[in-house]
Image (cartoon, rainbow, N blue to C red; front, side):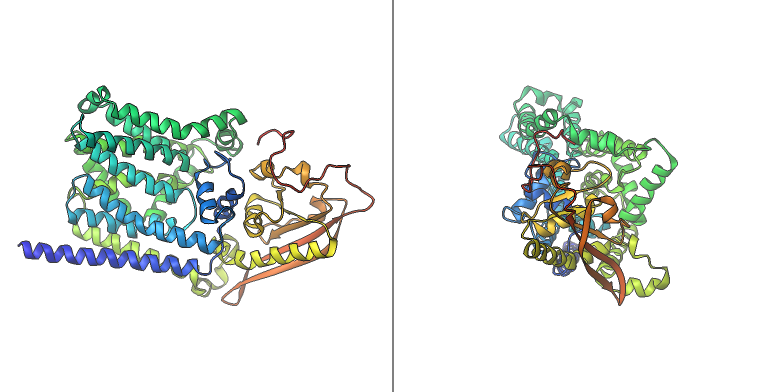
Length: 519
């Protein structure tokens, strides 16, 4: 019997390693040629403007991008190789967390295999985004918290593991605001009756102190600047917010798409088992509270906000993956079906991004405008176009040009392409990070503007920026499978001689303008 168990364990280990290597190879293949996605380009641009927080997220992702880029904007290839390798370590971290929670090797390997193939992680963690460090930090926090609650309250093991969990929660808050919900879940766990006596030790107080010290710079920045991130997230971008069936459909549809139905049904079974066992021991209480405490506010937010994204719920599934390793809540057939579905979806996603087969399959029904994979294809040629037009403008006019776009997604791609060599402004309808980095008051009267746009934005640069004349137009056409999927255009606009700028108004050096209120 023991020999049979060892054989089964060996097969499971081989499947886990094989799946992890396959997903890593697929990610690295995309990393060799792809550009940035639009949101990735914004996070990469953060590297040029170190701040404790930005309008969308705290500053950790910017520090990470700056580290990858060695003090500047990282190349897409460097960023994607980094994310591919780190994402490959997430299942191993899940295996360690499951073992820390007392799971056997079979259950822990099942957790690792699940984390490898569930589409929300196998596909989603490829991008340079706050979700990647958040996943790493969330799992590591759960692992150390599991060590803590299983240790004797006054032991050194309980002390160092609790302090480690507190420190990781602090860094998770720097990665994404939702990391604070994990901190609330840990505090709620320590306040339950079996663990309440631990407040008589230094461990939980020390963990709170470490987390507070790490988060303090972001809180102080927000307070000193008039809470720009809070206002942007909860006010400026929330036009038409309110509980609605449309938001419910987006939430449920997003879970079905990102997690897939078999994995989602398995997660519900694990959640039901965790509910039944939530009072069995301290570890079950920990995993239960680390699931429901973050889930409730995130679900309410997704039901209320029209711009909420379904992947915000991703961290809620991580405690369920650890509990999966501790019991038999999911049967063999459902487990195999879920893993097979995840593998198929991952391969389909790679096929969609890396090949032209989707265009051939869909034929005349294909709509390039709505295919986000085209972002990865467009801004390789886009980087070359931007650099060529900047060099040509500088040679022809002997003036440092300013790059401007109609929306933050184009501005971010342009900023990631030109780096610190050229200032980038943004003419988007809503105020964005570019209004702090290089305010409109500085670039409106620049002698030479390079207006960059793509086929998603039908904008007339001369109408948007009057009193200028067009002196050149450069284009880059992106094709997939012989079909044009996007066209990038850079229009050079030079100031009309009859409309001179106000003396001393234009300043090409990007950075905060003391006279400009924060966004």
